[in-house]
Length: 344
Image (tube, rainbow, N blue to C red):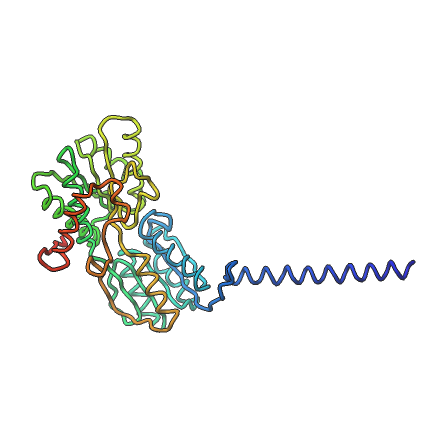
């Protein structure tokens, strides 16, 4: 009886060891970055540094991070991000990935330009890439967009669809990329509706929804019925103000989203259309070049011709077919060079 008890105890312990080993093996597989479908683990590591708007800005930082998350799922690469609380964080955050021997370090936003130049110069063997700024260094890939061309098209929509004859533009900081948004929007509004009045407000921040809400309230009180924002997370406040007013009744007001289709976040009832930028496409493309070993420094600008900017695919939900047809006509003229959209 004792022998049988001992034998049973030994078998039970052995079985426990087998189960523990299986559990450990499964845990290591999940930690490696492979997904449930069996995506192979890649040795490539990519880090992303946001500007002060943060990774959940509902705009270009979020678009960039979503692209890396997609590559993590599809290619099994290791991706990480750091949110910058202030401009003083940029060098520290960039260096964390560079010194950590990451295969690529992304900087998202114009504000990171000077600091990325510093880090790139000090680390010539590192590979870096940036959105919305041009960094003149052989180991940096710079991707910018012709925001003025895309903004022209949503300006046409606003000019054609305003019922009050007043439209607004809310910008973050007065930096070249946002000035391109303003210039293109203004030109598009005037091309579609020469009598329309345009009101402009720069909040000076990309991470202050309360300031966006206040700017929108002032414009709507002045009779503006459509606001185009290019202000990152500050634009959340613009949407919130419009949503509140529409729920309260009275005159209908709209917001034109930026960088990504913001109707997905804020709904079709308030989002007239969005001017999308191919941030996720650019991040995906350049990162894949690192994965396959074809990465090179240099710069490129993506406009209407390259399908780098344009209207959201959901625009037909709120924009009439005749207006979209006119938008397409202007788009063709811009691509052909017949219309030169101002940048400032």
